[in-house]
Length: 317
Image 1 (cartoon, rainbow, N blue to C red):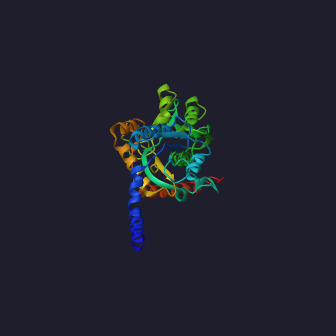
Image 2: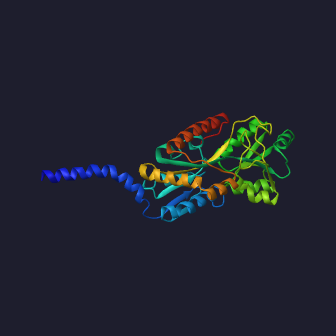
Image 3: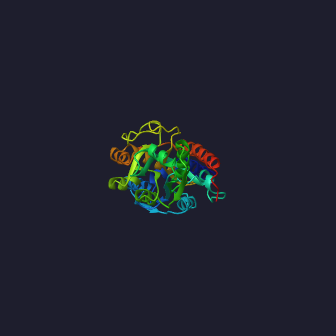
């Protein structure tokens, strides 16, 4: 009996050390849901589907992209945060909603309810204007006349960044809010708004039609992916870099072995020549990170966005 107890104890200790590695090797055993908290067709959705198509054969299970748009990405974020922490419900998102900057009680605390897996990419935003304008300076000149400019806003990060850009340009403008990047770009193309900040993927269809014009990137150096566009500094705008990123999360409590497996998949995706080329064609730079670096970046950015919301008197709902 004593020998049996000793054997069972030894097996339990061995299982403690072997189980995490085994879990990472056997995951996934069924289809994986990849939640995108935005409408189909935007830059986030395009990259999420590219990622899903890349990792599906590597994981050996279907990776099903599901769009859960609503409440400034809050709906999709909360859905994954409340899912089982087993690696079968993942969130592919952007920082489009700095929840503490906008909501008194947002109903989600990202660092407390989600596991940071990896950033996937980052990029400058593009300042795009209605085709009647030729540059950022044209916008500034127009604002000095009788007309009050209108900027199209569809996400809180973009809204706050637009306010920072307005301040740097000395523009007096009001926001016209939309539920998606596509609708915001359509409004600028139609002349219902004067300008917006958006990704290259969002702007591409309207740019081809000639109804809106990209005039600058929102960083102080030119983008390798969009070298034809001037930087903020070259455009005569004194402002800090304003970037966008995309990242992968899982519910809090997801085993570290699964987090590490998914982190490795993001790194493989970012280093794949075909995937990287497609991302760069959309204006994005692959940017994989460790889970810890992702969390640190997120926390620092959230603080700066909350500070901006306070500065411009953004009322929390």
